[in-house]
Length: 339
Image (cartoon, rainbow, N blue to C red; front, side, top):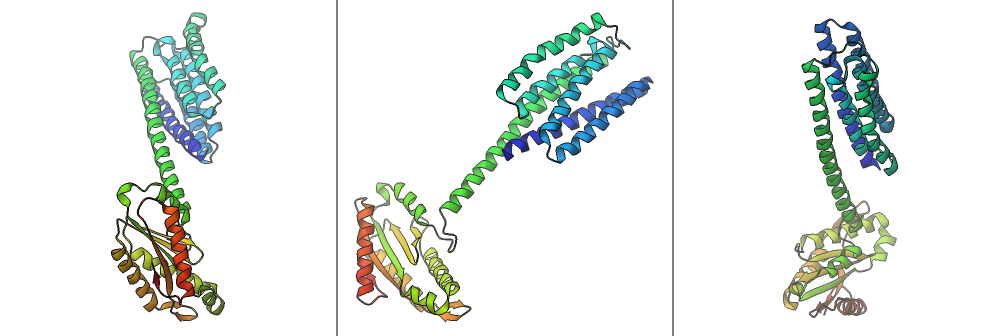
């Protein structure tokens, strides 16, 4: 909805600028011809578009669109009555109505009615000089005829170009919003590490080339004691510190995520058991010797990690085995890697 309003607002600005420029040019032209009644009319028209500009700026895009479209159609009738059909002023209705049907927030039926009424309005204006004598009758003025014809061409080109550019920009912004939404939905808000949702998507995208995949299920030892003794803010600092260590000691092709609570999961792709244990032991060692600064003072923690390999693509079994090994490690003294 916001994107469509942006597109309509941009269209309105272009049409206002184009129409105001036309009337300024017409005013200057008739000043040289000495026909000041047309100059006064041009000044009035520019004033209307100036008002439309501020209405559009206020966000009332539909009202602005109606004002601009109605003003152009009205002017095309007035110009035809004043100057005759030979100046091509009736084509201004085409330049106003067709882009309006494309850009403004109309229903499908309203758009059909607008497009269907274009031939009627143009032909009616062609018949006007046969029913009414043009007041100034400048049908032979080649300059005006060429001028209005080029205005219609320019307006049509500007409308199509604007639609292409704005639609592209909106699509680009939507793509960025979708990417941002994906990032938010896949990221743990506290630690900035990937979350369980991301891990599940990671598993679905795995190919045979990613195996063997070595999993390490990591749990912070006595985390409840940290919260109870130092407070939840200190507990959050501990979680962030562990997440940062996991992030710094894993590759882009690896998985490192907060699995839930004080549990973290690391998945090492194309990794042998020997090499994986070396990486996990390094992480355990860093965490054991890390002093985490909090408002309650420095805190030292340890982790326990259960390890299992998924060699045949059976992720579920490997994760279940990780859990079992993790709790074996908890029961047998903590602060260790259990295979």
